[in-house]
Image 1 (tube, rainbow over the protein chains, first blue to last red):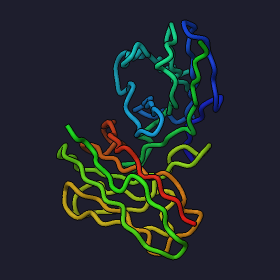
Image 2 (cartoon, helix red, strand yellow):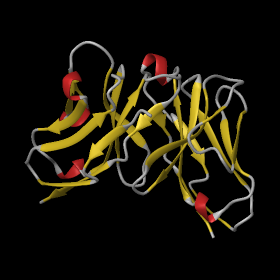
Image 3 (tube, rainbow over the protein chains, first blue to last red):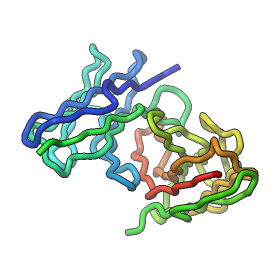
Image 4 (tube, rainbow over the protein chains, first blue to last red):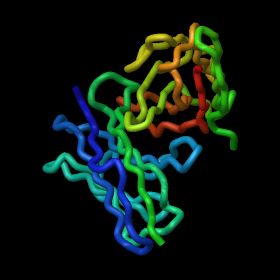
Length: 114
Length: 116
């Protein structure tokens, strides 16, 4: 079965430090990759997505992700963490097979230390 | 710009009771979804509707039923609630099917359901 794996259920960084959230997908290359962010007591909102073209994707709030086919990875980064980045982040993949099914990772909770 | 609206936001049910979660989207989207979110398990798809008039089971459909009332509305019904259905439920929609076109899914704010 296809899967999306997020390494680390909880990541903590200092304010101003690099944010790196890891995501790997199963080996059959999915055409579409997403990162969603969920703030406390809210729904998920799209941070960025890869469909075709440039493998480095820029999203909102200074986040970006790079699609690396050889590593089956789509890691999310931000050069300098801000307190407002504290949230849960979900990686997702779509396009494996049947329509309408997007596969989500189990999420990574990002904490920011002052 | 309401997007996806779901009600109620919070609900406490007794085991065996029934209830319906309502969802409506105002983006003229074709596809709609119901997910549940449990700690450490991410989002799991309960049911989806690729287009008006169609519904299909997702990963965890047991104990649930859905109705795609029209293009805007997609409801989720728990016929006989069980404690295992305590969860946060999210309704979502997309312009088309994400599997074939990479459409972005837009989520509602969530419904917190507790079954005691």
